[in-house]
Amino acid sequence: MCGSAERGWGWGRCAPSPLLLLTLLLFAAPFGLLGEETRQLLEFDSTNVSDTAAEPPGRPYPPYSLADFSWNNITDSLDPATLSATFQGHPMNDPTRTFANGNLAFRVQAFSRSSRPAQPPRLLHTADTCQLEVALVGASPRGNRSLFGLEVATLGQGPDCPSMQEQHSIDDEYAPAVFQLNQLLWGSLPSGFAQWRPVAYSQKQGDRASALPCHSSPLRPALAYPLPQSPIVRAFFGSQNNFCAFNLTFGASTGPGYWDQHYLSWSMLLGVGFPPVDGLSPLVLGIMAVALGAPGLMLLGGGLVLLLRHKKYSEYQSIN
Image (cartoon, rainbow, N blue to C red):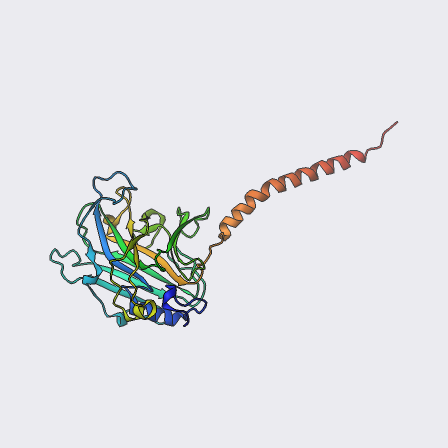
């Protein structure tokens, strides 16, 4: 490994191997995933909210602090074959038994080659990336129309927060009806990134019918946040405390929601260096080829017909 803690994401051109990346995640998650810390599980009552873009999206309930969760033994879910592991947790103090039959899970996975996951939103990954999937399963909501969210704190680079960008595309083959990609970039090179589609799912199969909108708030400085206690995070990022934070909320007061099957999942991609760039899918390229090629073929066909008709008439000899 190379680089320094001053660079935020300190590998530069020297990316860790997939197995090393997974090891780092296991030591750091679910607090301080490579400099990102999921701090709180948020819940809002959206019963009387008609504006889907409202901020906050409803009356907030007291948040669940992940520092107060009890987590499973990671060795029970570690799978070296798929380079993945799953953290499952629930509040240690749960007097209302909200999580009696549920849990909050963080599944982390590293990759050894470029490909796409089988489940939407099927973000393109490379060997320098890993995926974090968050799933809330079986927990009892505190309202009939509860919306859930996450508060995420991330290390800034110097005095500034990472830049948040939105990319738009005409291609939705891998995530139907989702034409946007959000990403955080650390530095102008950049030295690291986080990438996600603004969509979550209320069913395990993650189809279009269960898609939920995902809203992200602007990044804000959060200088008062303490650095995560992970020794791996401290080793890479030092003892600085310039954190930035943003909220992610999933769903809207209308349409499908967590209340359907008490299930919610969302995923993001984390990596070093430049983020993967999605090209147009073969399906979209084929449609564009047909749409652009059809007029040319019609003109070519019309020209051939005129040419053949002209040749046919020129074969007749005048009687005079």
